[in-house]
Length: 236
Length: 236
DNA sequence: CGTCAGCTTGATTACTTTCAATTGTTGTGG
DNA sequence: CCACAACAATTGAAAGTAATCAAGCTGACG
Image 1: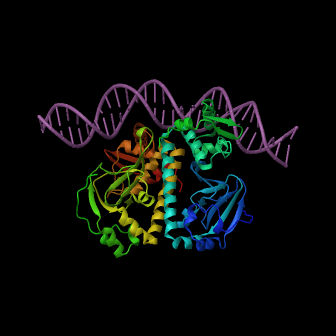
Image 2: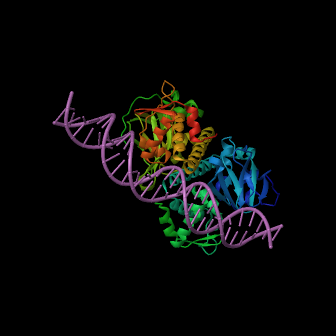
Image 3: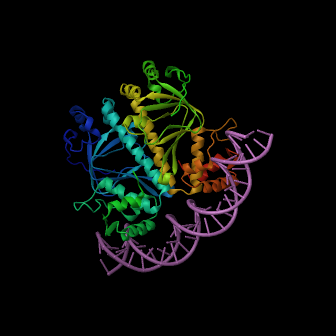
């Protein structure tokens, strides 16, 4: 794991602290800052790897990260995304297990690295934080279960539409409020929707001719979000 | 929700306390017992329903429960099983959300019903319990993610084999160490594996003619567990 | 300008679902 | 105890869906 130390403000005045760590007081945030490492991960670099021992908590200060797991025959399955303000690896730290998945930087990322010991200490002293973590886990579990049902019961077209909606929810749009603020390869979209690259391509162009989305090179424009939701057959 | 009050020992000497609530001391267990309701649920009865407001924690004292969610077109997807010693509903209680799924008694069940308030109070006072809950959630999340990958990437035959393995792990065997200690309909197995009833039947009889399992009426005998694992294409 | 990775398209194949029809099982009331 | 109804299991045939294989294309970059 390569990392170049850079200057990142202390946790005490991190603008991301609206996230999970918001319940900490100044003292605790200072404690968290103390001894933390900060790193830059280039696009494509692995932040941590499925199965490796978990020694750190990762706070994404800036960037986009994909979490994936290896399935049958080494095929990658994208499980979730994370972005600025999200934390990674807490699950493995709390249950003393190896990392459950592999985290890969999708763009250049600035990430704070907090040691297991510091995190555990802060966590022990702060019931509110535990509760936040429980709720975070709970949310992740909920969406994992939903994702499961989707993959199990929906058609490829519905799943691709669903994947696009997930991308909108995770990363939003560019300033034009229509262009998806993230670039994935067709094969990555396939790994997310649980289908093949070729089928993904065909389905995307089908959605395009249905005037639901528009494809401009690497960019995907969501021209009709309502229709996209309909295509995904999602009702909640 | 029907329930007949019955006599169940206080939590202080529940033999199931090896489970998640083991970290409680006598005082806390007494607190938990105080005011709890106990109920019997007949086979097929619903313990709680997806989307309903969550007011209770359910401790399974005896029985077998399936947790399912509704998917596309009302098709049921079985998400998980629970048995003696397991607790249900804690997730919704902790994050103040409606129940995420529907819990149905698979056989006659004795279940302790603990109110939200009591549970929250005990939980607040006991960091160890929070940690246990986190680890429980973490475990559930891990298996949900694994289930996701399985459904997304495996063939029906592999998924059915996987489903049978899950049933063995969840409920074990009868005294003969070979007959699955649970009875599901073919349609329920299908809901678990994410396939159709007909395909499930065909696949089961295929596994039967491969001498991996044996079908005897409602019972499924696992005659060759090793071969079953191979059939599931699972490698961990 | 060659190369490599990602993208696209077409054709074929394999797998699963769906529909339809039949048989088997279970529980209930007469 | 039987008959009936309701549900569960099974089997076959047809239709549909998506994966795979093969080939050509495109664009970025050293």
